[in-house]
Image (cartoon, rainbow, N blue to C red; front, side, top):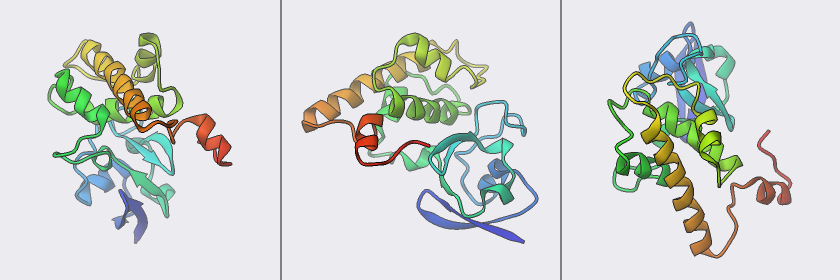
Length: 175
């Protein structure tokens, strides 16, 4: 039996009997990496119906009808999202295996807090296990991305449409 869900705006059918990370990979979404197959590595992070989750800890059946956003939805190779561009500029990618987890954690943090401290950034990524970095470059990249995103908002002359205050003013919440 298959489960239908929306991934990065496209309707996708995934076979039951697997976790969401492996199901997404088997459906061609290879940007999802599996580091533990149990929801503890922080590497397979996605947004599931707007909430940051680890795909390796979710059964495909539990994602039926859900809206899934992977790191590939943020930008394109020719037009990277500011978080992705900051990771490139700060050489925070390493092998790329844990990069998606870092970037999706950063996106969740910056949606809630557009001006985080270094300690808040470290806390946001503390569950992303990476053997290749001392975490300093990802921290620097996220702080830089936050600044870039604040500058973009200021240049547009408005408030951040993803900020809590703006969403609440529109009657929406993150939950």
